[in-house]
Length: 474
Image (cartoon, rainbow, N blue to C red; front, side, top):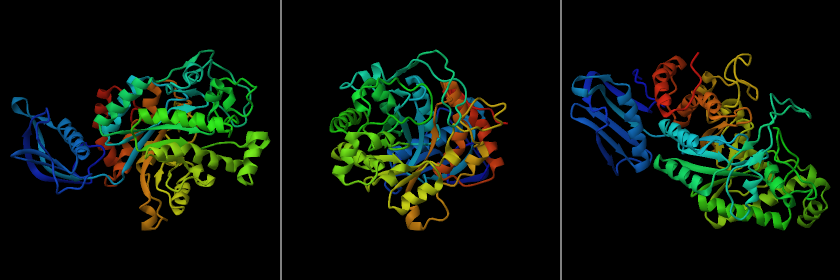
């Protein structure tokens, strides 16, 4: 492919060598939605007669406009305020339907204005899904009118642990600073509308039945020890305090989900399902009674039952359940979309079980991992995923049959914010790794890493203009 700084690179790009065209830097071009292209396809033709952008849908036309804007951005100045661009033909379409990023705002709250900038970054990279992790043990970030204490209490923690958490650690140093925040329904509707204008779907996550300590701190009756007043969790890791399996708690979650569905029109709703300890269910008389009534042999099986009960609200409204890969082990609904995070192999297991799957393996696309020498990099959770490793990521495991591979609907990178206290650190950890990820999510031709860096260097100026921080290239 010629040296044209477009990221992610188009699937097909043909240049008329030596032919240069004078173009309007404001992006003036003929734009058409046409019937002879597929819904996700677009074409760009730049000739001496001008530029024409054609697409099979309005969403695909947005992608054409984004690509053409990058083509103009990389052009050379010409006479009369115009720019000189090569005569090119681009034929392009994404490989995957789900091209996403997960942003965790539960561990550290991120202001609405920053979320809007993240959406601009996703649009720049032709990604189409923001997975919004809104709740966890350390904070509840979505306003729920029926349960105001979720944000009055659950959105705030008195302090936060300092430094790196080690396995099995019990004692912590804290910063003594109250942390929190939440999005009003109007905030979230603004985010959803801003995303839709850019062809991006916002998929909310209400993580359950584990990762619910903030909710239980607000409403102790949701927990398995209702006489104990918990605080919003001030350190990381996995809490044993999970939702109880009482009818009233099931109805609580259903009510929350109805309000969430009213805010988010997404066809997909994420219900977490990861890292749910069953130790409290094993000793709870009420949970044991429920287990016996259902004829279950292990307390952990209650998770599948609980998820089925609350997910019925999604089915009533025609929405699809999405969950982390632990759901495959809990007898989850057959039409659940599985997000494979623990490894690529977990994705293989999910598709072999017949589930549509989003590949999000921690070994390749967890951007809370170090990207350089830990001795000189900001504190991170651990492990090592440099930029080149992201560029080399292969979404579909080679061991899958063609039929199994068809169940992989896309891929997603993750930003978990335990060690990212502010938007500057999120940007540093996200970019430019997101640029490399976008190449794999879109299905760009796999070229050399050096060629990618050649296109990436001028691309960083586009990120700067959005106003998001990034890690400088080595």
